[in-house]
Image 1 (tube, rainbow, N blue to C red):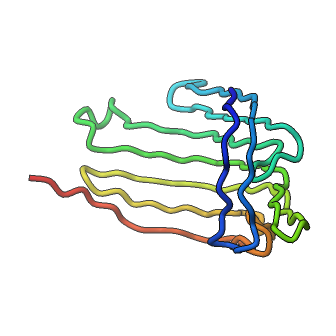
Image 2: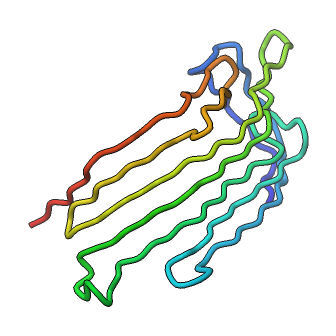
Amino acid sequence: MSIDTTVVPAPRAYDTLYKDVSVARRATFATLRGKLWKGVGVDVVAMKWPADEPYVPEYQVKSQLYASTSWLSRFPTGNFHVLAAVTHDYRTEVTFPAADGVAQRSTQYRSISTLFELRLYDATISWQYRNLLGDIYSVVPYYTAPRAINYYGVRWDFFN
């Protein structure tokens, strides 16, 4: 995958010293998606960019192992669904060029998260546990991502 020479705008919301860069990028990517057995599946996306390209990591991988079932033998109307997943995110450090000539770098990180969802009719109960290991990392220099964090809630679809 490649793009012609283009200007990549700087993320100035984080630091006004970040500068726009002109790049011609070429990346290699691979995906692996599908069911392994019954409701158990895998979803893997990997990207490799040239080393030291501004605003992109050299390697980035997101992989997920999941179990998803509507248990149609027991609930043939499809009003029930369960999803359980474990996600692994990996990204190498990223260079952020600054106007003063000193490039800043984010940290390399690896994060593991879980997801559990239970749907009954139009209501879904959801629980996510992100950054299970509690690692300290920054996606943007000097902006530390939250440590282990729980998200839970209920979604309800209303329609006429």
